[in-house]
Amino acid sequence: MKTKTLKNTIMKNRSLNTALLLVAMIFVALSGCKEEDDMPISNALRVLTAKVNDVNLKDEPTGVEQQVSVELVFSHTLNTTAFESALSVSSGSGEVALNFAYSNSNSIVTITNVNELDYETVYTVAMEPGAYGEAGNELDEAVAFSFTVKEFVPPNVTLAKNVPSISEDGEVATITGTLSEPVNNDVTVNLAFAGTAAATDFVASATSFVIPAGELTGSITITAVNDVEVESLENILITIESITNAIEATPQEVSLSITDNDSAGRGFIINEVLFDPPSGDAGDANGDGTRSASEDEFIEFVNDSDVPMDLSGFTLYDATNFETNTPRHTFPAGTIVPAHGVYVLFGGGNPGGDFGTAMVGVSTTGNMNLNNADDQIIILDATGNEFLVFDTQVDGAGIDFGADQSVTRSPDITGDFTLHTTANASLTFSPGKMNDGTNFEAGGGGNTGLGLIINEVLFDPPSGDAGDANLDGTRSASEDEFIEFINDSDSPIDLSGFTLYDEDNFAINTPRHTFPAGTVIPAHGVYVLFGGGAPAATIGNAMVGVTTTGNMNLNNAGDKIIILDASGNEYLTFDTAVDGSGLDFGSDQSITRSPDITGGYTLHETANASLAFSPGKKVDGTDF
Image 1 (spheres, rainbow, N blue to C red):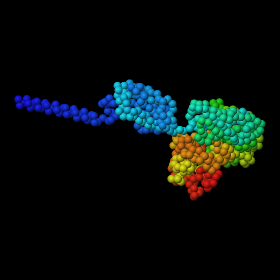
Image 2 (image 1 turned 90 degrees about the horizontal axis):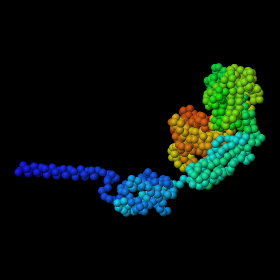
Image 3 (image 1 turned 90 degrees about the vertical axis):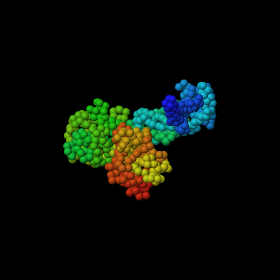
Image 4 (image 1 turned 30 degrees about the vertical axis):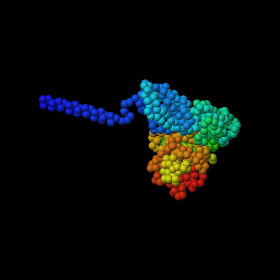
């Protein structure tokens, strides 16, 4: 009996231990669960998650769109009638009309507003305690979530043109206004016209346009009027006078040029061509220190008229590439040869010789590939029409184009073509000069693409208020960086569509800035481009802009500023290792030319100890 009693006692103890272990395991399991992972242990109705436009409503989100989608996930199936009568979305102006949609056995509800919500307004999603479950499940505590609708940013209008210039022989330009976003009402844009062109020089299809409700653009056309007068290059300035149902966020101005056709294609002539550069150093026509059979070829143009000649977008071919419609050269935007000016186009290289008063450029392909035996030079205008042709079999009949010298008009401009040594036995060519080696009496000035120069750059804004270069009241290491450009020529330069890079972004083909349509720097004008911020509209006499990305990201140690024209060709480059060799670009001041425009680069405080920078002004702080 003792043995049986002991055995029973052991069995009872084992049962007790097992029961205690089971209780402990249940306790641990329950205590290890997070609150949101708890399974309902009662019939209480609970909100498990709440979102507005996929953002957690518990965070009281701001900047919410006017159209919302509120998603509520409940612990039980809802009685939809009871639920819809209890839930509200409201603001200080009253309740919002709602639509309801259900899923997952009516335990998930999606709520949307019927009408757009008000800007900059706080809305509350609320529901009082009550029985809203299908099985009578009760919501024990009131529900209230808040969110704020985004602030109002008025839609704004920008202006753009489809071509940089129109010829007075009836060419047409389209001026387009574009809204930043569609609106529910018609937007009316009233325009104003100014500039050097007279009212009789063009016809506008209208002085205003309408952007219909829900759409983004409206436009007018401008048609040039033909006349018999020989006129200089004229321009039309189109601005916004007033807008209904939108705003003009930044001043809009489009400059459209009108070119005269009373001398075009006749007053602009080819005066000299080098098909066959002599061998050795004697053939270094472009003066870059190296003789090249392709790079030292050149064409000398003379604008023998009283009006400037705008070659922007014109294309040049030899006979071979004309057949394949592949230009040897595309004239960059802003290539304007002044009245009686001279322009020399080399095949390539880095021209550095004495070219008198001529403008100088190099072909965009680096090779004109002129054939010494038989060839043509064909120039098409920006619309693809034939503008000028030189044919060796016609214009140079009987001349040997492979005679180690150029062919030139003799006398210059008015004469027939002959070998250069026939016109002047002492010279085999004379790019930019008359065949006797002297300067033309009237000529251009500056190199194409170099008439626009960089005069000052701020890589490293000083600390504190002293670094507020853009004068918007805040010093920013990125927004107060700037580049000061000067158009050191007698003709406007149109930068529309040009792109600006620093060295890092050039490697990935991502511009830091794209010059907006209508960015035209007048002759001898100044343009300051800030990294960002809200600078004054003008500083001194300078035009002012900010980068389209809000950051130029100029490197204080070593960097490049690279500008490509609208066709993607290199237009202007500033290299700290070359142009600013030996300068400290991180010394809390700009680097500047001294004297302005013509001088070499130096630290600003070396040029003027009292100023760390002078955007839009000379180094002495006075206006240009």
